[in-house]
Every structure is written in C-alpha cells, then in structure tokens.
Amino acid sequence: MDLSVIAPPEPYGALIFDCDGTLADTMPTHYQAWLAALRSFGADLAEDHFYKMGGIPTETIIEILNEKFGYGLDVKLTHKEKEQRYMDLAESVVEIQAVADIARAHHGKVPMAVASGGIRTIVLKTLTTVGLLPLFDTLVTADDVVNGKPAPDIFLEAARRMNVAPEMCVVYEDGEPGIEGARRAGMRVIDVRVLWNGLPSPSVPGATR
Image (cartoon, rainbow, N blue to C red; front, side, top):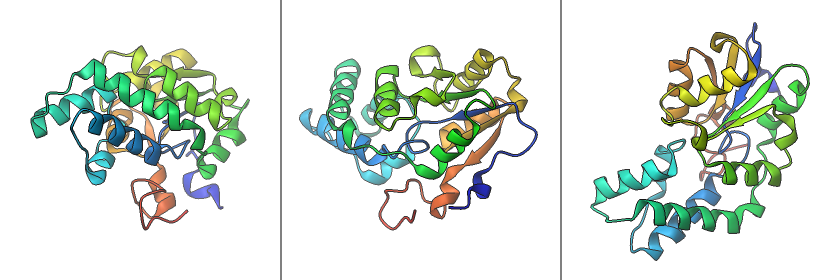
C-alpha cells in the first residue's frame, strides 16, 4: 500500500497514535464485548451508535447510554464487565498494517506515543497482542488524565512526556472525538479513515482495506 496518503506532513518532531481503530483493528471486538456486557444487564447497543462514540472513555459511554435510553446501569460494574469481555476476546485482534507500518518506519527516528481513551490494562493488552508496544516511548490512557477525548488533555500529556511542543506533533486518529481533541491541543491530525474511503472502521460492512 502507498503510505504517502497518511505520511506525516513536514516539519514534525513527534508522532502520536490512537490505538483502537487506528493502530489495531479492535472496534469489532470492542463492539462484541459491549453487546455481551450490556445484554448481561438487560441493555443493548446498536452498532451504528457504537461507532459514533469511538474514542469516548468507557465510563462516559455508559453514562451516555443511561441518559439516552433510560438505563440504570451501574457505571463501575458495567465498565468492569465490558473490559473483562474484551480481555477474553482480545487475542483475535490484528494490527492495521498501513498505520502500523508508519510507526515502524519512524521507530527510533522521532519520539512516538500512544494516546488512547481506553484504560491502561486494555491498551497494553491490545498493543502486546499485535506486537506494537515496543515501538512507543510512552503510553497515555484514560487513567492518566482527568478529561478524556474530545478534551485535548491526553494529547498534551503525550507531548509533555516526549518533551515536544504540541505544534510539532502529528496525531493519527480514526474518531471524531480524538480528531477534535488533537486539534484543540494545537496539533496536526491525520484521519486514517481515508484508507477505507472515509468509513469509520476497516471492519464496518462495505469498507475496503
């Protein structure tokens, strides 16, 4: 695949990658985990609604579902159940090669971070499963910031840890909350959905790799 379509624009001093749907094709697995967890509590989640919330922290999603559909889901308990369901399914996750190849090509040349709205244990599991964890200098997750995407906090923390000015960072993202958060952080953003004709995930029916 021609990687020029997602090559970082010069000049840049660091690269920051989202995890789910950007480095790793996790979204179908996350959806299956959500379905299993929610249905165990008598709730449900439509697939299109799920993809619209890509990048939003798990507990925030549960709060949104409670408000939108009148569910009485216990946030902590539902969060724990969903993440356990994902851990049980995570070995099936694969990398998104085009984006992973960008990271591999820049390893050791510029600082690189992962900035994910997921919790650390889940992100570590995903990156370990797909073999990409050693490429990155730092990992920033929902556990490290007060405000998740679309707030800029997670991206600014990644830049701080790499000692690179925000305006010199290029972010790879696949979700609207993450894209907005990166822009609010003063960073340039590459929307990796261009690889799949603008669809929200390479695994959405009809998408092409």
